[in-house]
Length: 60
Image (cartoon, rainbow, N blue to C red):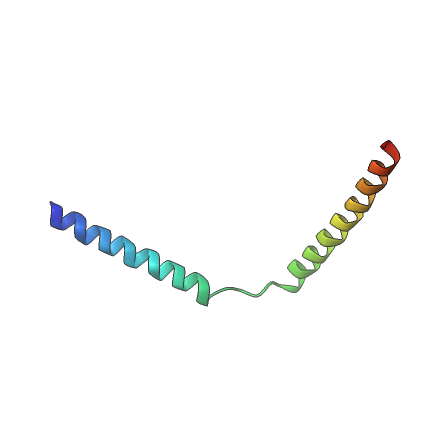
């Protein structure tokens, strides 16, 4: 039983290592639509920060 646990543990570690390696080597580049969406989110975030700064300035 102990040997079985040892083998299973080793196999699980091998699978985890392979999964990590796959993630590093197969990272996909964002699609143009995704890039545009990210740009839009960044612009919206900037605008919200400006609004928050104005509101904080007025409420003080």
